[in-house]
Length: 205
Image 1: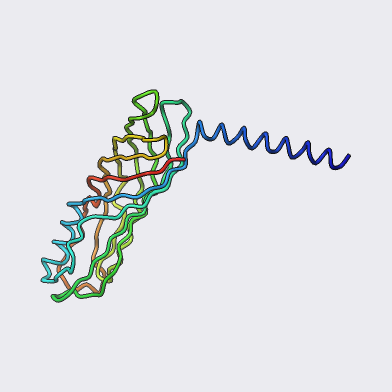
Image 2 (image 1 turned 90 degrees about the horizontal axis):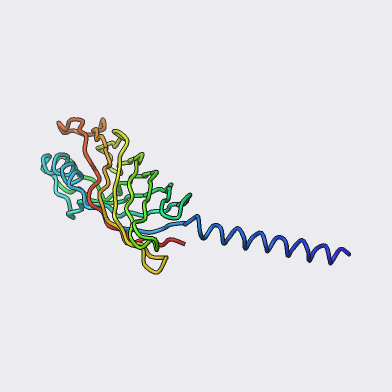
C-alpha cells in the first residue's frame, strides 16, 4: 500500500512539475548575456579628471563590459515585463602627473525594469524600453561615484532559434563624480552620462 501511495505521489509530482515547466516555457524566460557599451560621457570624465591633471592613462578605455541577467514574464504572448540587473565593468591605470595609481576597476550595478513588445507573432523582432537604478562604485582612490538620478534605456532586437537574442540601443546612466579628500587637483563635482550606445548577446531559456 505504501509503495502504491509513493508511486501515485511521485506520478502526481512529476505531472505537476512538467505542467509547471510547460507553463514556464510559455510565459517565463530566464535571460543571461554580455555586451559592450561605448560611452562619450565616461570619456569626458577621463579627460576632465586625469588628462587635465597631467596624468597619463595606459589604455583608451572609454566604455564598459556589460554582464546581464534577468527574468521575463509574458502576461500576453506579444508583451513581456523584464526585471533584470546589469553589471558594468571597466578598468584603467593612471601614470604620472598629479594623480598616479595602479590599475583598478570601476563598476556600476544597474537593476532595471523594462517592458518588451514583440513585433511579430513568432516573436522574431522586438523593441523594449524601461528605467534603471544605477549603483556606481569607483575603484579609484581619488574619485567617488554617486547615483545622480534614475536612468532609462531603449533597444531593438531579434530573437533567433527561440534562444539567442541580439539587441542594440542606448542606455542613459546618470552618475555624479566627486573628488575624495586625498585628491590634490581642482576637480569640481560633475554630473555625467556614463551610458551610451550598447550591443549585447543574450540567451533566453
